[in-house]
Image 1: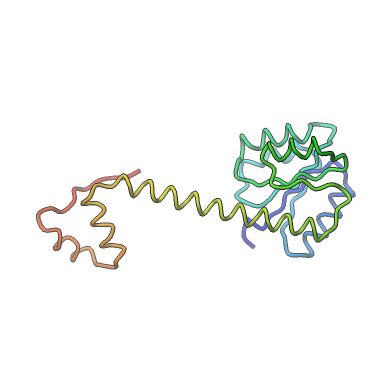
Image 2: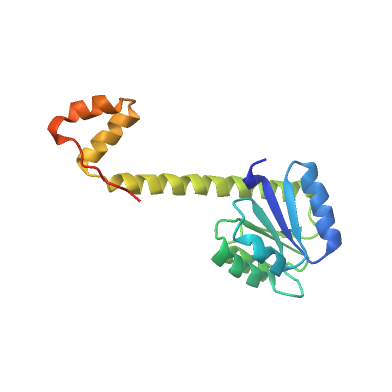
Length: 177
């Protein structure tokens, strides 16, 4: 299963973690849960995709502090804030910080799954948009002759045909890092 189908649960309540693990596993997600923010943050830099379900009220570290640290370590992971002590001010603070959703406990299973699916789709779309923007920026750095070679390659022309077509104006060898 793709990395983007991973759900990372950070909650100090073992009953909540087990309940979420069973629910999300049953609908096809791969789940990793963490009892402490430190345990999650220790591995967060190596996570390649997925979505984080973050409880706000934990004894070791406030959820907002966890979120701020996560943004420094792995800014691309979408975060859904899940809390039993929700109010408008807290929800606004979470959304301004960059959370993709804010869900109050108790929540319906369908609402949680819909929020996760939405977060994963948004994250994937943003990743593709970033890739397209990066590719366009790199193409814009090419000289006109290099661009001509690239266009010929994209059109499927073999190297020898491209070289012959360019004649004496063949591009110089250039290493792009």
